[in-house]
Length: 480
Image (cartoon, rainbow, N blue to C red; front, side):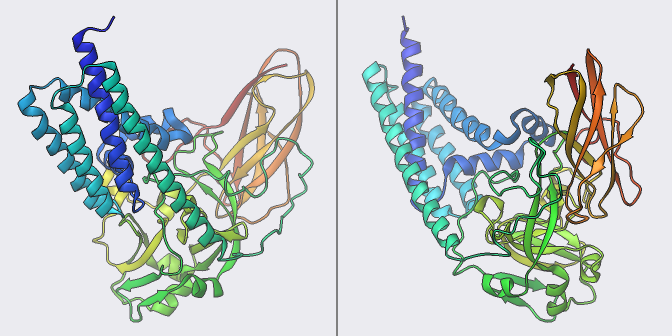
């Protein structure tokens, strides 16, 4: 049986759900989200070790976990407010709303509606907690209000997403749509595709929701220390774009993990853009800036000379980029970890000096850039029980930008034996491999390692992602 205190807590929680629902519905009228804004603020504020632990535990579900954590925090906060003396509830609730509104102003691309949502949520919270609802019917009424508001917010967001998807589809192909490359290992079941589909490519960024961008009004500005500033449309970029194949790897991709994918990209070489803009003599850094202000900067000289083949990417696998992957444009330098290769939802390229400080160095990561190390992943022969005898082992390996020279496999800490390599798609792309080994009955540990054309051999010692990227062999255990 619920005590009076329990009923008060349930009622306060129900008011919290309703307040958050109202805030989300109002923010969604212009595409904003109160939950996502608060979630982004938490990501920006918490220490890097906490972020690393959260990424390790949640994996690809990090955005869902963050949203759930924000919503749960608001509900718990409402219960805490309900326990305060009545004279304190309203000022504390309104102060919380003012804080959320300030965050929205600083972080949200739809700050007007998000600020309004924060203020409205605070007002609903203060009004609902003024007398702390006790009855079950009262709590259910507040919960129903919250559910209805969340449903309205979801409908608004869905309609806006559908409109942007239609706008993107009208753009047309970006590259050789429908051309499927082959490397000779198409007959191996369970092996990763040579080119990763857009919906299977990993997504990693600090935004909980991609910003919505109208391609008809979007422009890429090239500004700063240049003789000729540029302002380019998507169509103008497409006229000078080329296709290239390259693997993209997240700095959180531990051996054997899925935060890596191989794409056929369509983009304009940064060397061409720099040639047209003509950097001034004291320009040393190229700041890649997303429309929300997030920045990553790169040294100009290796990009200008072509030593680093960087691109402003506008297409993937023959189609425009999806919103999750940075539509309408992102910067990509094959061989650099995704965290260092450039911003998604690109709005500006600014040429500046060395005084600029990026997002991640402010958080404690090295200024970089950090290069991807050789890695081999085992796709075929999953952990578990298999038949003894001849067994096929296959997977993918990468060592951009130089390319994979070899892949080796060993069983139970024995000698390393070379695997057969498929035809190389491009040095910066991943390369598929396959071999056959004989397993006697019993338990066996299988490991694989990659060797780069530069002579670098994959490091076997385990190292966490922070601060220079992970290392170690992908190891699986099987019972023959």
